[in-house]
Length: 248
Image 1 (spheres, one colour):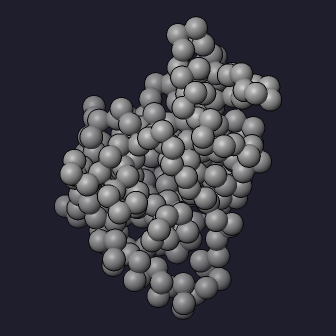
Image 2: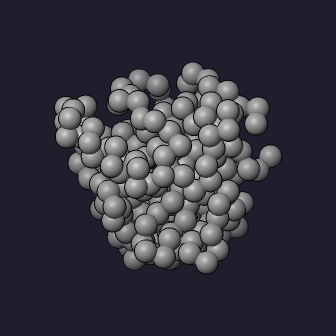
Image 3: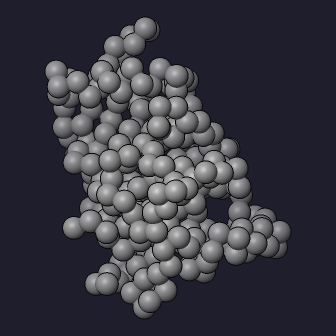
């Protein structure tokens, strides 16, 4: 598939964003979006209220950069319009619905019920915003945790993770819980800087270990390759998969 394991370099965390200010009842709020949109990041809500995300290597690393940006931007919303992304491998149109993603720092105390109106204001043609390039430093990333086997199905991953947590609890200490809510076809992840940095680390690790497994034929659409964060959803985490680039 043309993808090989590659070490992370600073340029991998560079992403262009557009910042738009919108009026709220208490003043102004900044909404940040990647520009252009990340083409190979897809988020789906499943029938049983679980969440599945697919990323390729380049956009998975850009997504990690946006998590790191959220850790540094406690008064901005990071919005990824993933509803319009091309359908990822193994998309199940009977049981999955595309959703947008918003990173809402806890310090902002944002109420998702206000999102639909703010999204309309941010998408207005009159609100052109300002485009810039951001590249959070590699030093923002926590150290990698224990390496996990890839190509596992979700139940296998959960069993393995539970066993390693019992056997090596110090290696699996995690920052406070990321809280999730959904409104207006959007998943909101509310957390502290440590939460977002831990999620970014998992995304980066996914983009390091996923490609070589796909290269040798271990790619399993719908299989579990790595977790973005524990204690995120109903079964202790959002299900995040590596997938070879599905849009060129």
